[in-house]
Image 1 (cartoon, rainbow, N blue to C red):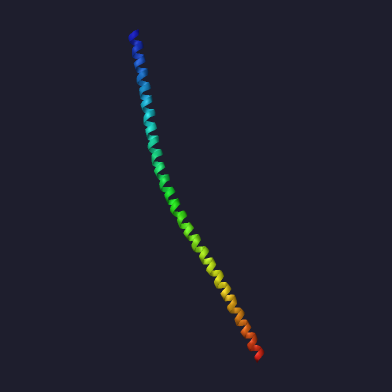
Image 2 (image 1 turned 90 degrees about the vertical axis):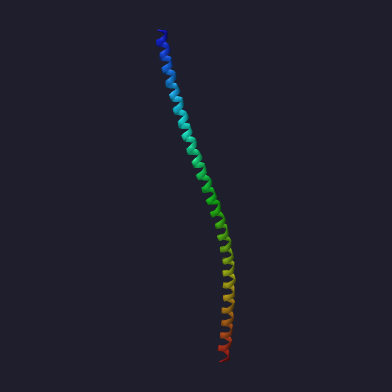
Length: 94
């Protein structure tokens, strides 16, 4: 009877050992996946940072172009005003 109990306990321990090994293997797989995802997220963050820098540069360029456009618009308005003034003077002279 004692040897049957020992055999039963040995089987149970072996089963538990297999379960613990399976859980350990699963945890290692999970850790590997987490590490891969972490690396991917680091690369994504680097890309986002690069895109952010590019967008800042684009925004600065657009702001400068907007200022230039405003200056050109003001200059054209002044040119048109002077042309109209000259036309008015020329038509009064005739």
